[in-house]
Length: 333
Image (cartoon, rainbow, N blue to C red):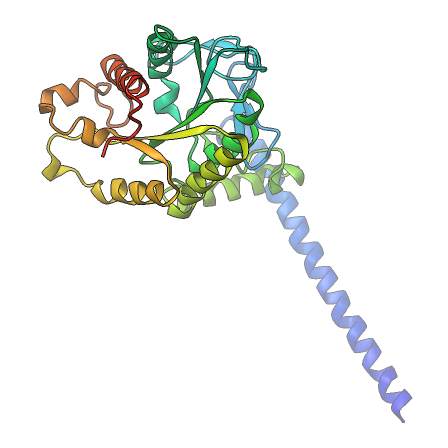
């Protein structure tokens, strides 16, 4: 009797499995159809997605998928602001330094985003190079700029762990911008979801890539993650102990007219608390520039830009760094 019941169940189970397989086949066929339609729309130009001229842009997908992108080595281009952007053999916007630190050289590494990178200015006008020239008046020094436009705290932490140590710096400076707590979604079309390691490209599906790309841009692009900021400074402390270098953090405010109108005080306090927690010295330029007249502060930033420093702003930062090193004063509170 039990054998008879078992035999009656098997056709039903097999039938259910067949239904699932057929449904899966239908869904797959529909997806392939939509994939074909989407590719035709992309090819005809009706949908502009995934077209990147990799030969002309300075950025490339990074070997570490978590970093998403970095810069090509030994590459030269003119930016959209008609400024020459040139990288060295290590993919840094900087001079050709030796990886092995020469004897007697005081070496500084700067890690940051577009603010420290100096997107809108010539290379020699960035605060890293101004600082380097001033520092060489008193000692033989190199200031290596590892900054990359668009990086956030999470990507800066990877640079800190993977790219900085081989150069054996004596001092590491993290140039922290208040938007460094942003979500890691890449740089424009050079995004997480279009990277070779992402799900869509691995399945060779432009449609899936587009869907995931739009979801990420729509729902996550404005996400803020203060935990990544804390992880950056925790790693800075751990790496400094591991490799034996000094540390310094620069905190850059957004452009503001008066303190009463400035809405980011709590962010400054949050970052300062983290730096105190991990025993990292800092300079907060909100405090440095607090007593400047509004028209003077205005000139420290690019026109119609609340984040990026102008030529005079870069010079001011370079001078402040020089004075701090000269006077062994690494904290402005």
